[in-house]
Image (tube, rainbow, N blue to C red):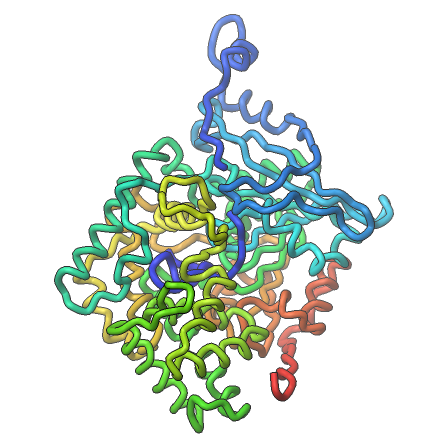
Length: 550
């Protein structure tokens, strides 16, 4: 179901610049089979698990991220000279058949900067998506977690199906670019049929190019991988920091392995009670609320879009409708249509720091200048960029190797969710989505068709996260979060079980809270991860307002 990524593969893509070459799932070599077999038979599941847990990780200097991870340069050493190390973890392709085929997961770590006696263990990160490469993402965000490195090795990974961990590929030369498809069809005919056809053809291409791994990329198997990684890293407990979709992965891990949970923080918490349609509807309300907050700020700053928040929202809705009919050209030969406008706005709502740029872009677009918003969308990894390489030498061949983040998002979402919605389902709920948000509602409603025609049956309507008896898990909820609305933290706490979920409230804007830089949030999270001290019940952290004129 759409979760941390927020606006699904339809219109509103996540701005996380999670940079997502892929290894195919591989059967054991002949030599491995010889070692696995005794004199009289095939290795048992128990023997296979023992071998997997006894494996040693061969840590080496990290290369540059592969195209599947998003490309770029090799990670630079940290300020104290610590170099990033990369390795691969061998794990079963199918955890229900651990003696069968296997796959390799890509890992990255930075060793602890503190004294050996102060080291707690490894702190495993998942930054969301699903579909983002943790190997490519962690080095860029490491400065935010430098204090945590005083007692932990910082570790992340490409979950199965992502990046260099048997990354899913749905590319097919016969498929149109997603940007060419109207993601909010309103004619009930050709546009709707084109969207349905695109989703089904994409599903067929995924099966054609990655059918061997598609049944095995769901969150439950990823959580089992994390427990194997915990064991191989030598930790008795899994210490974990999950953000956005990573909170769902953390909740599923706690459900499967409550006795193995260490100090865990979930930030930007997914609501585990929602099915895919309910999650999309909640996100429509979340993005609408966040945009209204932006509009109120913009009016206070004296922007030219309107006298108050209501005027600014109304103008933006009208602008989106006008751009749907007649896109604005950009000076580089492109155009700004309604989909791109939504992409730029939703991207900017992920961080309050982006609000001033959004104000400038909307004011320019209202005056028929599309360049600012088009540049903003590309810079945030939205329309066109999508977190991958947006250099001018990118070709138009959809089979060229590039980040697999979008494909992995679709595959993991559809493997997790048993919901398979039809056009009639969407049309029956459209009034609810329009009431929640005339701006974001239609795109989110139609995103429910993402899994139409998917070749693998999904697991369940929503994730199972109940973990009675587990140690406390710190849940950070942001009252202005557009992608994972604040109510999700309370529902995660309830589902985790009594005395397991501990809530911390951040009265702020943007997606998540720790990376906002708010000292209150960071101090509370650091105190738990470093010292085991939980915030007092009912603790609320307040955001500092943007400076005047920004």
